[in-house]
Amino acid sequence: MALEIGFFTHGVTPLSEDNLNYCLLCWGATGDQPSAGNKGRLFYDTTTKCLYVDNGSSWDLLLTLDHGGLEGLGDDDHTQYQKESEKDAANGYPGLDGSTKLAFSQCPTGTGASEVAIGDHTHATVYDDQDEDTTTTGTTESEDIPREVSSDIGDGQETTILTKSITLTRSAVAQAYFGGACKGVGGISMKVRLYIDSVQQAESANLSTTQFDLITLKGYKDCSSGSRTAEFKAYNDSAGAGCTVRACGGLFVCCSKV
Amino acid sequence: MRLVIPLTGTLRADGSGDPDDPVRIIPVSLGDLAWRAVSFDFEAGTVEVEAEVPQHNGEERLAYEARSASVLSDAQAALEHTADELYALTGAARLKRKDGME
Image (cartoon, rainbow over all chains, first blue to last red; front, side, top):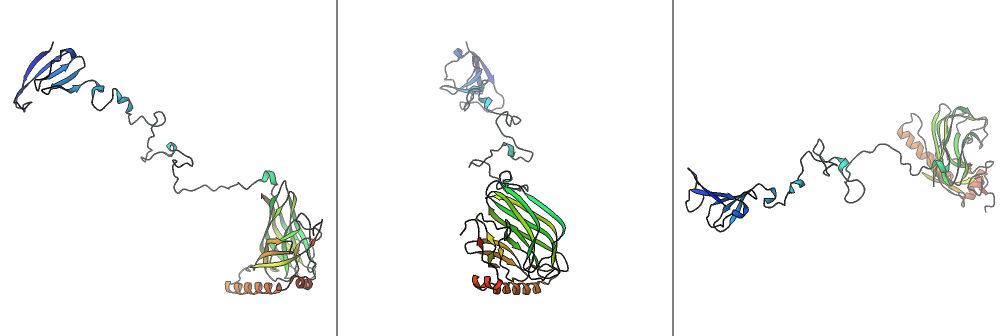
């Protein structure tokens, strides 16, 4: 059974246009709610814990204690909201770093169109070893000559100062380098040469007879498997009899796969 | 500067030279220049080389450039002959082939 109580207001705007200066509040269980028709009347439903207002023809919901009774929301949908402190992998939402930026560790990586694009950046200095294959083509060999004097060389003749070999297990490019200081003795047309497998690859200009020249010789040659030999030689380019070459440096031979 | 120089010596079937008669350029006087091989044409018996004149220690740039141009010009002139003439002038034998090569 509904109980109705009258309230008198003091100094406030009347609740309705018919200048009523009071409203009626009644309460009871859902089944006790009277029919609408008394505009401005209030009813508190003790079953649903809702407060209604009579608009003259029906009851409008004014207040409710049930979250699910709010308009525009589903029942108990507050679980979809998340606190600011609830982020990262445990909750499935990425957080921001100290600079309010998304941490890179939380971005997708890879090469697809939906992946994060990488901006300007610096690579560490590393070797791209895709063409290195020392395990299957052979090894690198080198040898130094602290100071070597060739034997006397006649005009147009040459003599070997240093030899170094590697063994290729399959076809490869053999590369040979000589770097060092050389000096001609006895004539101004002494030169040095570099060979790979007895095929001449390079030749120096005339060596100075007064000082050691810095000499670099290099060559490369497509080779099949087997032992490959680099040779560093002295050459007498019409310098006359009794001439020699003094040299110190290193002979380096290596390979790369074809 | 690129130069094409005839070869002498003995070439073996595997592309290597005979250690007793290595494949090398003919003893033509190229002067005070250095070179490195760029490509070999064993059929023609020649090697194409990249030639340059090293600068001496303390040599002034203008003097070096003049000397370099002169040396390279002389080298070019020394090679302005037919292969037969160059072999005849140097006394070198043509490139020989060994182990069944033609």
